[in-house]
Length: 209
Image 1 (cartoon, rainbow, N blue to C red):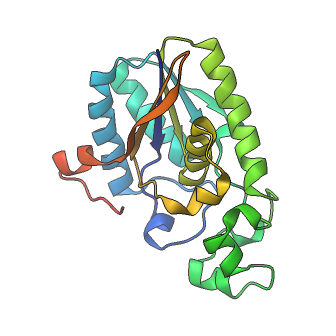
Image 2: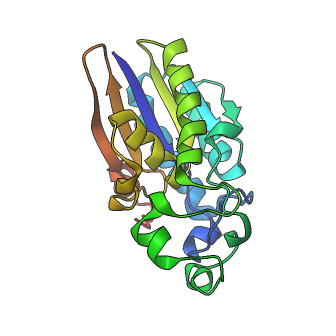
């Protein structure tokens, strides 16, 4: 049995301001650092074998805090970076609505059909993320693999692993440092845990989700 642990990065100031971050390299804020320490304590119990992370600071810093608690290193990859939102990045969601090339109905209601500045489409995001995920699973069969990434990318990975279409992208949410767990064996792949943030309450840390 191979187990894939998916963790979103801790909170940033732009998360609090409801800004589109994308590939802009934003640091964790104080609550984000506390959240990272909380998920690190939870993962101590999970016998993680290997850690992969996005190259962006908010994810890599989260992964590094976890890695320190587990006595492991972190492998960084651009393939796990957040969606490239192009000229949407830095805008609040209210400001995005006023962009001439932004369709609220497409992105918020039918994101799988939307044209995304920078990345092109959700399919492009999922393809590069799943190519990487499939490789690390193949290289680490029977191990516990931790991936620290971003809300958008994690959702495309979950849908890809479960064989669910991208039209379901906006049907669930991934909070900061939320834990999702996918089990993979020869017979089936299934989700054991989705968007678990119990560790934040247990450690008295703010939860924005």
